[in-house]
Image (cartoon, rainbow, N blue to C red; front, side):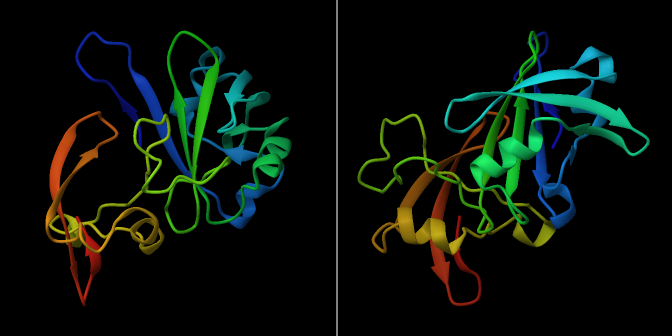
Length: 189
């Protein structure tokens, strides 16, 4: 997942997906060179990492023979949020500052809540919309599977097959899709 921009001439927002593996939950987290370039041209610096709870953490951006990484401050940040192997993190950097925001998705690919859980009854109008993450491979281009945990928490039986929903892509594009269910692939959009 690389940089994206809504239109030409606009300031590019950089988004990066990171899947935490057992080796990436230690004292540093490898990041892309593209993301690291936002700090001193890739030579290093300090990122102000905004946690999903709104707290700002100072995290070192550095480089070694293996490439760029988040160092000093990262282990404390990861531990404070319970990030571990299998979590999906989406880092977002907007040019003009050293601020990096983080969205976390659990091992079921559903948005990880750090405050009160969102239910179908109270998610409207809030700042946190129900979200999940999905890797789209050629077989899923016609039917995108929806994680069972997401279905359980946010989609009623009545809505399946008779409902059109709106998906928002990382490029801020809206897609109208039908939600359906079958025996072979479960719930899909």
